[in-house]
Image (tube, rainbow, N blue to C red):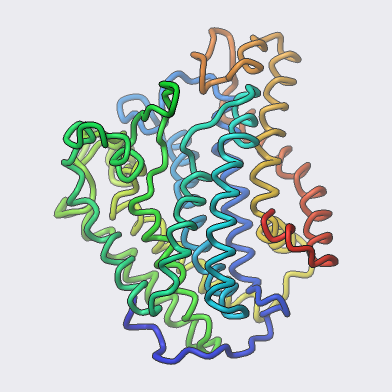
Length: 415
């Protein structure tokens, strides 16, 4: 990645760069992943299934792909957060950028264990180490890392992404009283907070901070002339995608063995049916994300970004689906918090309407309780609820995006 970075980047005005330094194609891509994320959470709240979509023996195309397409969300959250930080820093001093990153990072951590945790469970207080916590923790670390030259930061980030799988065999128990620290850094599992409160760590810091750092370095590509940057982004996307296919077919490196603390099936090999073979090929480890997982998701995402960048230059997002995605992409934190409360409330309403168990949704939901018998729906209903939620969310999101455009209050940048 570092070979594509200009030695002395200077901002080149683009017809699709707004006065705030935003790039429409990036906002549309961010909006798309927000909408896809809502599909995964709709499945969480409405499904009647009692097994994970990655369970090879029981899953099937429609179910697995409904889950698989949402794998693109988290990598792009972190990667584009880094890119956004680069754009933010181009218009401010290094000290101002660092201050914004560590204050926003701490704010996100507070949100995770208060507002976001409550949205998942309707319990106060409640929280776990999810994606918002990890975004916040990575921003705090990036507040120091952005003081490095961009080439150094990009190179170190790529090195972390490429080599962190070498650490998969290290278990928290090997660190004794510091086991909690290794869990936060690189292992899916529980940690004990003060007063012996156990909390689940779903998103770790490594290699997510590397993904954010790589996204920061990636921002320099957008200082290139538009046609040149599209070529660079497309070629980078093709290289990453090809690397995933090569590593996955060869089982050479980049995904932990089955049962080594993750939930994937480990190495790929031919299955009795084409369906199971394809599913296993795409089933790579997300917690923490393996090299293969990040190549599989970031590679195609960059190809899509290159296409969007060209399309947005030819046809501005003035109406239709692209305009809606642009709106969502400009208010990602607002959308994230609101969609959790909305989908959870819709699940309560649907359960009451269909005379299914309701109380468990008001006292922790699937985070604290086993899904009761007689609850849930199939994929068609899940997709219906997803589309309904996205349509509802468009209106408050459009209002919030308009408010942020009209007003420049400092606190709006944190939401």
